[in-house]
Length: 449
Figure: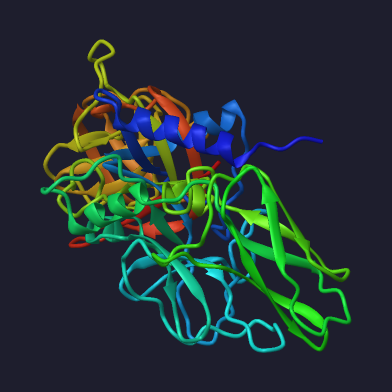
């Protein structure tokens, strides 16, 4: 049996983000597939094979450059009456409820210690944490919180979603940086390395008339804690604070817990090596990357208005069509061919077949306009015969019965992107989505590493 560690996942995520930020590297959201999935139009599950990738490319309608990327974690909103978990280095993944949260002010906190009553039972959070200082925040309900960072307006608009929230590390901040980034850099620089953050009781023992002294042994320095008893049992252990509002001690790579008397046992909970706040991506165990693309209503020639699509993908390094392997760097581009009609054409219908009377070429109609023509794509279902200028075109529905629509082909407009170029990194099959005039789609894609 084997695992991939969070450290390795973060390295992969960092490499992806570095590549994204590199000059000359372009990532795109691709949308496509106008035709229905099946009779009930229920999306099928994509499979990881070459044929699936080829099918996605054949159905591609257009691309929109991805301008933003961020690490993200599952979103946890502060809610009165919720009992939050404390940070624990022995817990796999995210406990329920979680050990961190985002407040109504978009401030992110990590729970150091749960509020507990006199018998040691955890109590629900009743006070939303506030404050952005380097010291710990203790609320009236007994919870102790560590402020990590604030999700700024820009990050919130791109990456704050119903199920995810952005998590960030600030490389450097100066007077021109947003105030939230300056504060976060201060938090990062003030982090205390390798602390004992808490003590988890594994057995509370019995017969205690008074709280025994707690000893923390290890290779660090100065960490101390105080036990709380109820009914002769140790029910809680609180870390002692120093004079500046922080937990005492630092420098622990290893630590063990012992008591002056009795049979109680416990284990130490250690912080990340650099300390809480030094890197929220590590603190919150983020192994997810979100990419954000926003097709908008002005991209009518590249990503069609009033068209529907059923696939979303991520492509890297797309090339221009017929331009000697030249990188495509524009904000948006079409992967569809446009057929232009001679005057007098009658209306065609989107999502039908268009057929050439002479060539017998067939294609799906992604968008039809009797005055301007029709945007089309071909797949292995339609075949890949070429239409001929001057031939008469007609339309049928997908079942093959003749529908309205005839025209004479006048000319072609080629696609601007080569749909078979670049690396296809991600495919998402979904129910039909229609792009409408006057709206911007906010496509948030989360890659789980």
